[in-house]
Structures are given as C-alpha cells and as structure tokens.
Image 1 (cartoon, rainbow, N blue to C red):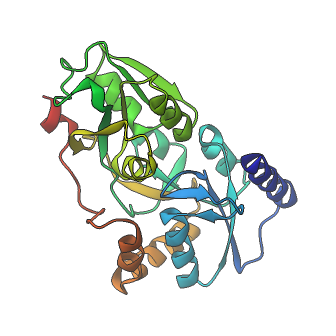
Image 2: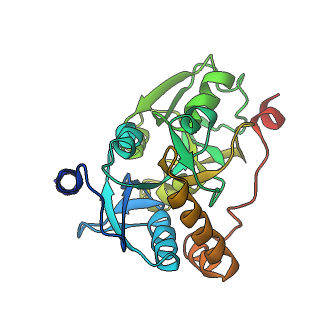
Length: 264
C-alpha cells in the first residue's frame, strides 16, 4: 500500500508537470525508493537514504529546492527521458549503454559487488567452478547481471524486479547466493533476524565500471554543469564526507579490484 501511494504521488507529479518545467528555484528529482540504504521510503512515506541526502546537499549548493518522486527501476530512464523529472539520483552505475541514453555527472561513489551465501552451504570459494549449479539472485538491470552472465555461465541466475524481492527469496531459502552492491547487502544483513546468510569472498567491480552517478537528459549541459559544480563543492567543503560517515565507515570513492583481477 505504501509503495502504491508513493507511485501514485509520482504519477501526480508527472501529470502535473507534463510538458512544463518546475519553477527556476525548484528541481524535480527521480529515485527508486527500494534500494536501502541509498534510497528508500519510510513507514511515514518519506524518501530517505544516502542518495537523498547527497541530492539535498547538492540542491542546497546550487540554491534550488529538491522535489522528489519514486519510480520503478525498470522504467526510470524512460521516465527521465519523458520529462517526469529532470535529474535521476538513484545509485545508477555508469556504463556505455546507459551513456547512450542519458548524460551522467561525475561519480559520487563506487559500489563494489559482493556475494552473500546461505551459511548452511559452507561456501568459502566464489570461483565460477565452486558456484557451478548454484542458484544466484540479483536485481534485473543491475551491473551484477553483467558479471554473472560473463563469469558464471554454469550457475542458475534468477532476476527480480526489486532488491526487496531478492532478499525475500533468500530469506525463504529459494536462493543459494545473492550478488549485489556490498553496501546494500551490508544493510540487509544487519536487519536479517534469522542470521541465514553472510558475506563470502571479497568485493570486486566490473572492469568497465565508471562509478555511480546522477543522470540528466541527453544534451542538458547547463543542468549537468550545475550538478557537477554542486558535487565538487560538497566534496571540498566536507559536507559529502559528513553524509558518508552517517552510512559507511569506509571510503566509498575508492575503486576495488576488478573482475578480471578477481576471476581470471
């Protein structure tokens, strides 16, 4: 019910703004709302998370008011292109295919991937050979899909519309492992009362990974410049690091080892 309400709210904003722009002192921002701790919706219907806080800080720097909405991950780029909002701040990883559809800011973090596995499997090795025949879940459209397709052809990969659904199947024993962003997995493990699962193996990132960034419609150079300026300002004045420390106790701008280093 809560997500339906938020989606209805997003639709209202979309209809209200169709063919028009917000006032010059406001900026419409789209996120997903189902990727804690980066973006999520509270029981009270508020959008919160690291993405939200970074967006709010950038808006303060460029002197605009953020107006947020939630959107389905599978349709978030088309929603941006359809002008339902002007900026996407949803922990989207930059890649070459997406760069053909949107323009990205400079990255505001690198999201290393990592496996979590059911403890009863006793796994200590996450090589393709060790995971042959294992059932691995992840969110469709995530960069983890690319890694699984390239390096784990002999595993059974199950894709889900949302990360919440991945976690639900893992908790119910329908998956052996999950491959996803380490920080989102850390957040879920901290909330998992059953203690079913834990990290296995080290973190890594795709060879082609360019970081996670905000996105605007192709050709919107003026807005892109303002956002990059705002990001640079909060990194220089300490605001970025203050926000980061509320969520993570390590440097999320550091680039971890690549898939070619890890699996080849």
